[in-house]
Image 1 (cartoon, one colour):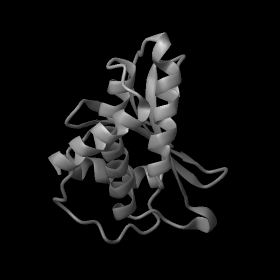
Image 2 (image 1 turned 180 degrees about the horizontal axis):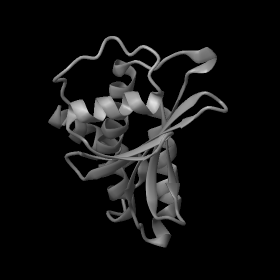
Image 3 (image 1 turned 45 degrees about the vertical axis):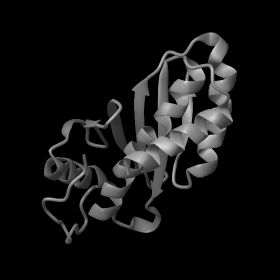
Image 4 (image 1 turned 135 degrees about the vertical axis):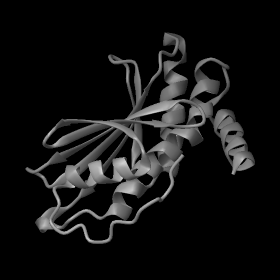
Length: 168
């Protein structure tokens, strides 16, 4: 899924999205430079493809990552889904999940603050994207189990964790 073919140690004063584009090219990710401050890409995981968007906000000097996939759970499962999201978020220290019901999207969000003119590094970009994909892969089974399998959130988390460790 993620591999290092080339290391970029001297990033200089690259615009954060220019750096993300360089990383995406080195990883052979399918990407689209949406604008000067935004890039969108698709990264393949074991369970599904993830849409990953990184956007630079010069106002608050934050590189924002949104990693999402479509999900349309039955209305009756939403309370269990929100409960399992809370359990998953308790285990995610860098980012967090949210469900955008209007767009029918499961979303993992992360913000890298680069205040004071700090430049992002290649390793940070790789880590941001890798963590987002790994979080999706790790918790996707739990989301499925509570929405379509009727499992209790705690049980779904135990099953998903056991499965994640089984694949490691």
